[in-house]
Amino acid sequence: MSTTGYVPPPDQTATQHEGTSSLAINNTLPRRWLTLVALKTSARFYKHDGPCIPISKSLIVKKGPFVHLTEAATMEFVAAKTTIPVPTVHCSFVHKNRAHIVMQRIQGKSIADAWRDLSDADRSNIFAQLRRMFQELRSLTPAPNAGIESCIGGSLRDSRIPRSRPRFGPFKTVQDFHRWLRDDFQPQDHPDRVDDQDWRDIKEMIMKQDGPWPPPVFTHGDLNPFNILVREDQVVGIVDWEFAGWYPYYWEYTSAWLGNLIRQGWQESLTKFLDSYPVELEMEKTRDRWWGDV
Image (tube, rainbow, N blue to C red):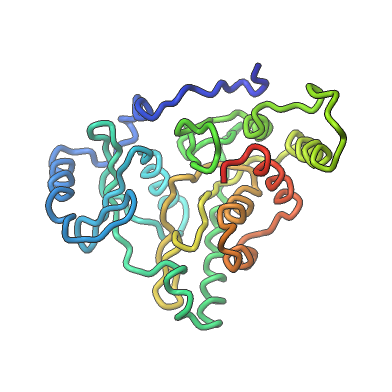
């Protein structure tokens, strides 16, 4: 029996777009038609990998089974509330049960691709810009009684979390979110469990998870070096807001750390522009070990 008040739905991949028509942006017949035609014609002249498909030198379309209109709404939210460079959304709509987001194609290289060509001074300047940007993101104030939710108060996505189906939430409280992450596991339901180090780690994790928490902060949720675009020593774009939403204060740091296990250099760089949370990182390592999917 769930103690969170949130009952995970069955797989909603086929129905995730129901009731989302109000989220569409500039959803006019000419824009839809031009987008669909471009995907069959001009897109053939550009290489692409994954859900993002260039259709011109200045536009790109993101579409796929897990793309959601919430991402377009998130980019508009961040653009309106901050000075963080995000792609300008030209339009978004659902066609044949697939969300399509037409957005600006930012001209720049990912930090991953540009890293070797950057001087120490360039890197320091970039990290200073990123710190200012994410401090600005953290300064956004959630709505009264906001829980763990998207910028519009709805569901979230994070492919690294099991049972996302393909989306999850929202949750009324941080504690509800934590209990869901551990599948409502409670130590008192297992009185015969051997009190070894693993068990002590789990109990310590739960004690931290169920304790008091401040209001959530707005979070990108997928800070890997391919989602930060630069030109020379200037940050020109933060992209891929698919996982963004209101999360506990530690989530940006721990999800970036755990999501980049094979990029140790990037893990070490995170503290140059994000506040580190070593206690919460240990909590998340335990959660990831027993209930994670990365």
